[in-house]
Length: 68
Length: 173
Image 1 (cartoon, rainbow over the protein chains, first blue to last red):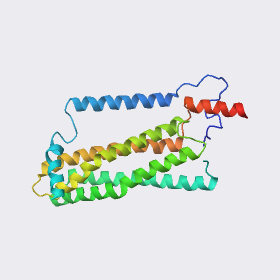
Image 2: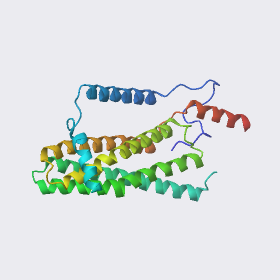
Image 3: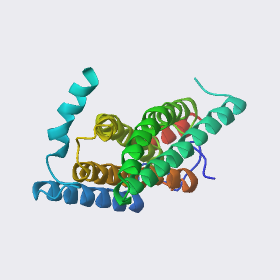
């Protein structure tokens, strides 16, 4: 198990310059960015899971019913 | 504040139990969501949404907050820190994101339970809500699996802040 900051942790620190972002972080960020773009595109296209309007149509009734 | 080794083990135990428990609770929630959209029996469907609301309120929400808070303690009170390693930082961001989404969706989950008890609400509308719950449960499970994997593999990578701290420690020693 790699240790905390006191160990080299893959950034051997031989140079004083800040190490760049690891490849796995870059790949992770690209994947997340892609998912966000996909999510926004689907919403703009109106392709929400479960369709439109149900929650808005009935949520008020649910809360009114709960208050009664 | 730095924890003793015994305290670190206790905090780690609590963090692992709450985090893995949260995964299990979301998996159970997902199983119910699948049943809710696939069952042909209307009574079963209506009962499922009441059970989902109970699991969300009584198990998932407390575990999500516990995992997040104990994780914060672990980060702040151990040499790992919260911002020094990319794997810790991403765990924090993902868990915070999942908890925020859960809080936002709690109203929908509660509404589903109340509407399921209203016999004037049609099955089509319940199905529509059920699909949303299923998608969110599956998404939440997928998001929270990533921190679990990061915790085990601990991939290398110091953030710029972590690197500066490492350099400062080396300069002192």
